[in-house]
Length: 287
Length: 235
Image 1 (tube, chains in turn purple, yellow):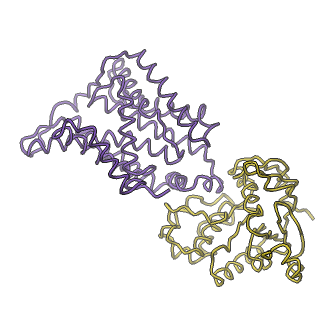
Image 2 (cartoon, chains in turn purple, cyan):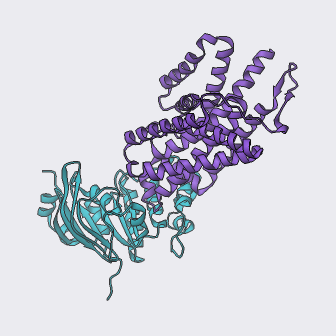
Image 3 (spheres, one colour):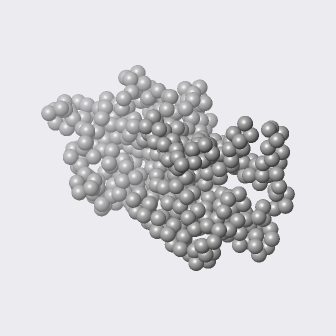
């Protein structure tokens, strides 16, 4: 019983991180109609930036903020400088973002080397919490990650459903040209979407670096899992990213606990089953 | 008398891939409403898209209020005073009726506010909370027009608004457009339905194979069955 609950909590923690990364990916995909394949590198960069800032200033909160802003601005820069001229050509955009991810991965390897880093959580978030069931003491930091993801999810939901800007993004997912034809500067909207989407990856890296390690390869791992999350949940849907992250997080952790040899197969099996039943993803609309 | 807000199209060439769709199209739309008719596939929708910047134009000129708009991005064209009601209505299924109007919002100093659109189309006010994909064809058309009006257009470019609508709904639409025209709204209407086109337009342009084949008064075309058959009949 205790083991089931612990694995469940692990699944939720992983799901929380996957949600933070994948919600950014799905936001950008919704507007651009193309996947930003540098998104995993943005995650890792966010982690490293947070680590460096915390290392030199001893401020955990500042590290989080700098990681979020740096990666957000990098996303805007990538869009404005590299993607703007080719934004109508999906394949080129995908290739350029792969290029960016390769360059970033190499530069991070030069700066941080091949060892694994981990970010020390602030004093208040260290230690364990007795959750009151089956004598389980669960790391306080992981519970914080969970709460943060829920808070970000709620904020995103309010942003998308209540604000004019959220309406523009949702309309853009349906028919971007028609958004432009009502007098809205879609390029400016892209800049904001790239900032928010990339900043979410940076924040996830900074937060994830406290629960798991940061090392070369982490970028590819998070890109892969957030792609699965977005495909399972439905491209372009924030609610879909939440549901997809929950499913992928829980399936991967339970598989790791009970069928360790099959763990990575199970995650892909989940994706295949969803695609067989609903090709557009659980919350996606048919193309 | 000054005639601002005039749409002037000169020698417009538009290609779709390698195909020369519009070939040297020239016309003017001023205060009197103009309709363009023509059979399917003659390039009417491509013309509408090229006018608002959604389809790249090859050569020629499109000016409004004396400003060159050819090659400008759609939001600039709309900002210059061209409102666009697209073929197939193209409402956003993810948004409710009210969200459509709120999203576009009212422009400062414009006659058109969200409430003014609801006054024009009381039916939309009743359906404000409804997802736009659940609206009837006629309601979606009202929404597409309301959305375009909110951009405060000096010239409304409408592409096949009567498509797929019941005759009674088309009749209402004629009434609405006439009201708008009487208020001074300028309209360039692209239509397949000759009855609709001639009830709204005073002048009619006939598009045949990417060229303007005729430019005449609506009454003149209505009275001339031979020309109707020549330009529009199924041959």
